[in-house]
Amino acid sequence: MTDQEVPVLTIDGPSGAGKGTVSRLIARRLGWHFLDSGAIYRALAWAVQARGIPADDERAVARVAAEMALEFKCDDGVQVWVDGEEVTRCLYTEECGRMASRIAAFPKVRRALLEKQRAFRQPPGLVADGRDMGTVVFPDAPFKVFLDASLGERARRRFLQLKSQGLDVNLDQIIKDLEQRDRRDRERKEAPLIPAEDAVVIDSSEMSVEEVTEKILALLPRKLKAPPGATDSR
Ligand code: DC
Image 1: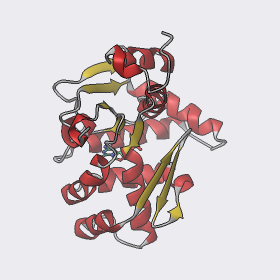
Image 2: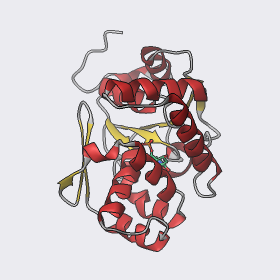
Image 3: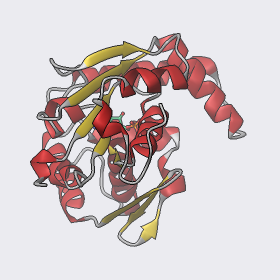
Image 4: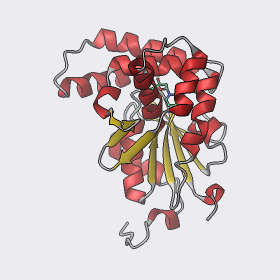
């Protein structure tokens, strides 16, 4: 199987639409690899900060993007190493997300990360979660989803998630942060957050994780849904 023949399911959408949870579940169900592309931008944000590089220096940030050694392990959760150091716990703070969104607007940075993301396309298949998976990174992917949800619902989910981690959170602040991040991700010139022309748009505002998962799996042909050695009992 050449790289181009490896099936890819892209799941793009704004922060908090549930892409991460759903993508991971689907990858596990299919026995496919999983790319959390946001974690790559977050890992870069961490590396830039750790090296004391100004976040507005596009050239220097792109150099770090090209040079950093990234390692991912995706089992139940994602674990990430940058230059041999485990950084997983640092990546999912609001601050790291904000910084990732800022440096992700630089065209040179996006170009430097393109091949690192495409390298995840390995047999038997890939579920790719992000903002531009279906439009830029894997434009030839045979299955594309754009997962959306209302701002209020996305903020509510983020609030509950952070609260369950014991963090002191404020719903109004989360709404403001999400609005700002949405604007930056949607309005940037390079690879803005928009549905690919051939993507199926799903609004998850009033759907459970299980409902979204089933709806997406229904888009795939039956023969792809049984990982080697598994029996499809559905
Ligand atoms: O999905 P996330 O919240 O972990 O992503 C963090 C930021 O990284 C997001 O605000 C924008 C950027 N990003 C991107 O520009 N392109 C992607 N494919 C994934 C993330």
